[in-house]
Length: 250
Length: 301
Image 1 (cartoon, each protein chain N blue to C red):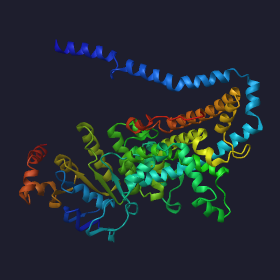
Image 2: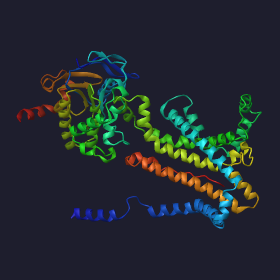
Image 3: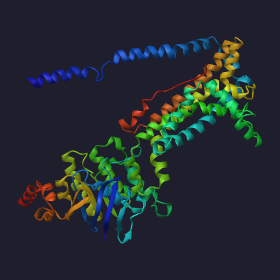
Image 4: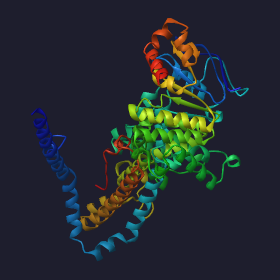
């Protein structure tokens, strides 16, 4: 009953970027879209977010057809590679933005918003930075703000577009586990776009390996390694066999 | 060994400025600022200095001068408000949409700067005079523009159009779309995205453009005098009054009015600079880049 993507296609001019893609995300599940650049994974994520629209196919969220629904009405939290923070607002105001934009009827009270922001910032371990501005934060801290901001609207789905690729390895690892913990705690499904095999393997319940606008294989890390569906998958995940072995050894 | 050398050279270079040529460029810059801006202005203030405060006050507070200031400032405010809003709209259309003739429209915006202002004034008169196209149309509706306060405001608007557009346009071009997309996914409607996300980022350049348009309008002469009617107490602008006083060889009076006009324009520009500095204090270095814009000050002749 989570998100179902049926037969979604998209092309830029004569260039087919998504070719009849099917995907389903279970409630509470963490799915990674893994593939080399140009494989269409970001386009797929943006179509799910409602920032772009597919030419064919359907998106169904919890039984509701959302194919043509505007982004603002989908209630999907999105985290961007470039953070996309509001530079002229403090961390607290950034986080509160989604709640403040709600129509008066469904908007929490001022103190309600304040409490929710505090809880979220504490969960993201940046409670002490609430009054700072984005320009005064490090990359890792900024991405935590973006995460808290996306979670503030109580999203039905969390979308992450290469959220760690601008960060250095050490911070990336810390943030990865923080993200996974946060997602479990909140209990929502999440879709992560990444080109980093290790990241996908570490964080996701199931991984969709993409290439040239198609999903080559969709399954758990173990399934992908044991029974690769195509030579591309086998080749793309070549280095990861060692990773799995190391994991088994621990 | 090698590390000690690199360490020493790093120390030496850190004592020097990172960007070379500081002394030469600053020297040349200051020379030109002195010759082109400060020298004429100091002549004005020297003339003004000959005047006692009582005399200055008598000239400034005379009915005719006050009337001229009232006309000039109110018409300049009108032109500024119009150009700030219209400039925002025009910049928006040019930056955000693709349409045939876009490049032409973009080029047209600079026309008021390229055209001699007197030519603009004469063209406006030909248009708004009782026998002109617009004049005839408006006359039927009992509206008179030429030789009234409205004519002054229109002439001022015409000559300061580029400020409203050209200050906002580059900032609008540099806005990152993913920030607006983030706002959308957080549930903001289009109007909320503009009000809470886009406009706050444009605000410093918006204020700067408005204040430049105002300063320019205060001192506008060529375009205005043809359409103003130039009736003392009614449609006489301050820069024309300066001209009249000069014709009468009343240099102290001319310099008193000119100095006041200049001071007013300066105060507005300084306030605008402070306001934009405050608005931009949280922005990152890259986002602040636009503030290195030229500050064009055109005032009383």
